[in-house]
Image (tube, rainbow, N blue to C red; front, side):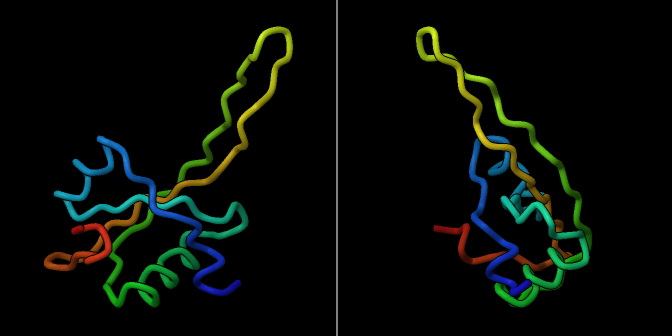
Length: 93
């Protein structure tokens, strides 16, 4: 897998913006990607040193629209902790 195939998109919520103060950034990643591949992808794309990666498989919620019900897709998210003094400029704006 290529680095840009592993990192799908950044996940920006109130909680993840609080984590950015601690040097942790959250991304939605490919389901098949492991922690080592995710760390290499973040290091290559953003030119930073990755200290630690935690991953979470998130199950999609079941939603109803009248009588019909559907399901949001499952996804995998990665919480990436950078080395001290490192930051990603993409999230600054």
